[in-house]
Image (cartoon, rainbow, N blue to C red; front, side, top):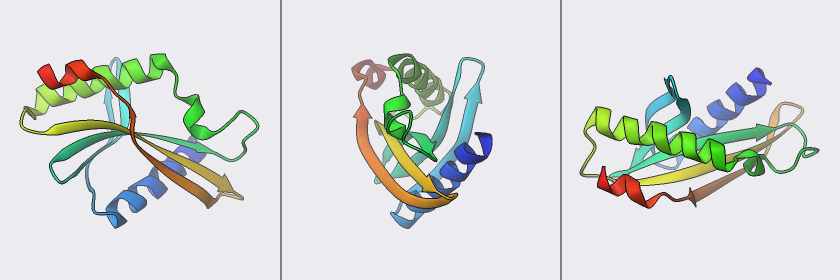
Amino acid sequence: MKFTGSKGEDIACQYLIKNGYKILEKNFKVSFGEIDLIVNKNNIICFVEVKTRNSLIYGLPEEAITEKKKSKIIKVAQYYIKKKHLYNYLFRFDVISIKLKNNNLENIKFIKNAFMYEKYKYI
């Protein structure tokens, strides 16, 4: 499982870089949560959750992001914004959904604005 997630994050990084994003952080961790990738493009900071699956037996990768997980990502994002004093940026929460077949990329889906949280703009 850890290998699958790590492989997915590597694929996501390559995809984002190829599409003009600058990687600011990988696996940004604090005691209350983690954000897989934090990236910037056109002065928009994107907090990206990467979900990778080898099989669809448990559903699409993006379906594994629960409300509890979203809440943790939002809290970590708020902390990151305050810590880095990023008050002159727009923010977005994205998801990259990756399906592997035989440990090779079969499908990648980039979901911009996958979920929203209005209060972060007032931090």
